[in-house]
Every structure is written in structure tokens, then in C-alpha cells.
Image 1 (cartoon, one colour):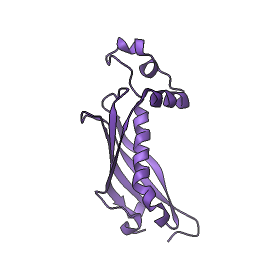
Image 2 (image 1 turned 30 degrees about the vertical axis):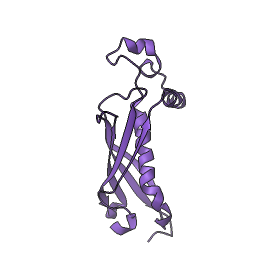
Image 3 (image 1 turned 90 degrees about the vertical axis):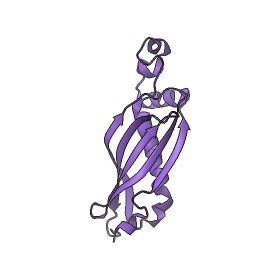
Image 4 (image 1 turned 60 degrees about the horizontal axis):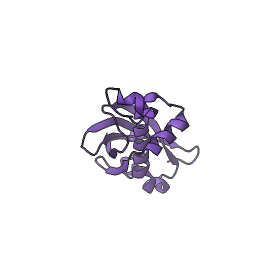
Amino acid sequence: MQEADFHVAIGDKVQFSKTVSESDVYLFAGITGDLSDVHCNEEFMKKSAFGRRIAHGVLSMGFMSTASTLMFTPHVHKYVGFTPVSQGYDRVRFMSPVFFGDTVTITYTIAKIEAERFRTLSDVTVTNQNGIVVSSAVHIMRWVPQQGVAK
């Protein structure tokens, strides 16, 4: 696989923003089973260091996944013989809380293309409406060769 076969280049970037609602957090809590007081008990959190409920850190990782989809889906039909799949996230950090009602902006930037390893590495940051980085990670997208089809 050559760098041109990735149909993205170093520095390519996508962004999207979303206001995190109470229903987002409760639906995520229900799906994952993480019903911690930190996320679901306003009275408990009034007495906490944060003063109010916070969203799950891993919810911001879900938003990171959405950003990767926005980056690669427009090109997916061009990946003849390969299937692009997420290989995971490195250096995941949750630096600041996301509160109910915060608007987060996810920025996904292609940082490195490793053609010989069939993958890209991308820097992903999540910032709130005040410009504070609340989480970050490096995303690894891998192109898995299809048996008998790949170049």
C-alpha cells in the first residue's frame, strides 16, 4: 500500500461540535451500565469538587470515533482490497470535566501515515466551548487486506 492509497494526507483535518445533553449521558449510562453518582446523582455531585454532574470520559471517546468516521467514510469506496477499521486509541487522557450542557468540539488531524504498516495515526482533541481541552488521544486506523483481493 502506498501513501496515496490512503486518500488522506498528513495535516488533513475534520471537526464537529455537539452540545452534551442530559439524555446523551443517561443513554450512555444505560448502554454501558455505568450509573455512577458522578454521572447520575445531582444531589451527590452538588457536594463534590465539581459541584454538578459530569459526563463519562469515555463518551468523549465515542465522539472521537465519530470524527474518524467523518474523516474516512468519504473515501471508503476507494479502498479496494482493504477494509479500514479502528485499531484503538493510544495516550488517552481526560484532562477536564465535561458538564451537562457543554458544547464540545472534536478535532481529528492526520498526523502520520505508516504505509508499510497499513495504518494512519491521528491526533484527536476534544475542547469545550471555553477552548479548554477536555480530552485527547492518538487514533490508530488500520487497513486490513482482504484475502485474495488486496494489492
